[in-house]
Image (cartoon, rainbow, N blue to C red):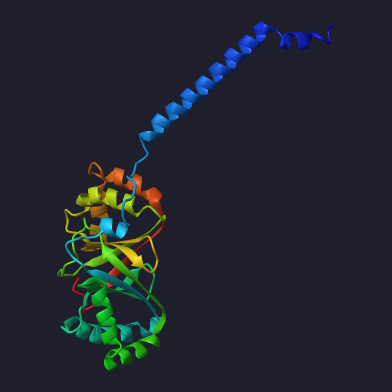
Length: 280
């Protein structure tokens, strides 16, 4: 009989009813906890509307059709001065020639970050047709082709990107110096560009009070889901003061909170302008 007692207890209607009630309560509590967690989580999750168009159409300026090209040239250390002198001569001629639908917005050497590097930012007014027109003319320009030949002897590597500017950023305009420039580059997770733009559209005002915002761009060709923010400062001390001041403004912390999870990788370059740069 003792061996049968557990079986009889298990078959007891009273015990079955209590077990069902306990299980039901457990499930209800679990469901309630999930709902509570979902409600609590919703306070911190930044919802983004479903995309209806390519982010290049949603985030770029509609009133202009400017296309930008950013070049990165890694120069042999012993050749940097010669490279700078030669580039300033040739690039200045292209900038001043009305037959070429392009202008050099900025040219820099990297001071802190990747060393012995030159960065050039070009603007093509008229978009892709202007870019194609300029490239075709350059292939017929003997002086430029000779420059490329000489330049190749000085470079370790090079790459470029085609960019559009964010609609909510101010257009990069010539400015007097002396300034240092910071190029902050963000490599985003695929599919997050709209969310990045939404947050920065609200937050850019926190970083414009000292005229430090130069331009904001995102990539179309080359490394994709890349964002470049270009800033100007009097020196490194003013850079620190300006960045610290942003944290005293209500809303800046929210921008950082929502955009940091979107980033895969980021880097910063402190750059000095070359003589031909319109951004001094």
